Image (cartoon, rainbow, N blue to C red; front, side, top):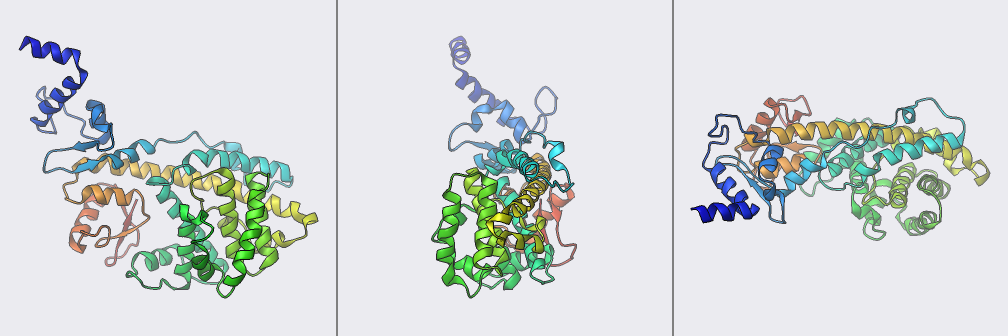
Length: 381
């Protein structure tokens, strides 16, 4: 016995295994000392740090509890808040000096840079919420009446293979913008042409080459985004949606983000976008508009990410209370997708089991019901 104790003292791994075995024999709610046990993801990681190491690391609760894999805990670690957003960069006053506007935009974009470097999990959810916001504003600019809620319904409640409709196709294009695939110069052309420039797909290759020249030039991210939109408006003045799309894509390339962040549409008026088609001598006016728009867009995007992070932390905190077999998969889905119908959150989820699961999370304050309806409900952070 003494030799085993000595071996434990000399080998931290044996200590960890022994401690794991002892805790597995205890009820998870209270240790032998009578003190409550922290069963949150962070609490278990503190007690058993070895469980978070390695490709196959996992946290296992009792058999009746949820088994969470490493990806969930990666999400927990990814929810750390970035540095505070500089208050002076939130100014809503129209800066007349283009240099001041560009400086404010640069500070704002630098503030969201750390969170824009995340392209999975919460970073993907953030982009998809922004895609919905931008698509709804683009649809409104086109004279249609669909709201964010209407677009969400059209997207989430459609059956596989169904056409989401004209407004839904705009949302599809902005959701595609929010992925790595949008930076692939070959695969996206057909879908973008159908969604944002119907009937003008044959002109896209030349336009893409022109925008690629702008992005490849030795200039800053703001200049690349502004000039990308200008090239589109000069070639196709009626293709406002494509101008916004290319601007955000060009910004992401120059910022070296893994995927674009939909930002620009809600902050530029249609009349202001026409300035982008002006002659180079008048380009300073458009660049001032573009800079102010990105400064405001980045500030609101920062706030949205903070809200999503807070809600994600709440979900992770209640995760140990979940007993559903598919709980781990459902939690991961909630951390990456904007909205879920009860029966389509995972391949194995039925409408009844999904509704029970989401209602349980709603009662715990971890998710919201997004529609206010009694039927065809949608749930999300």
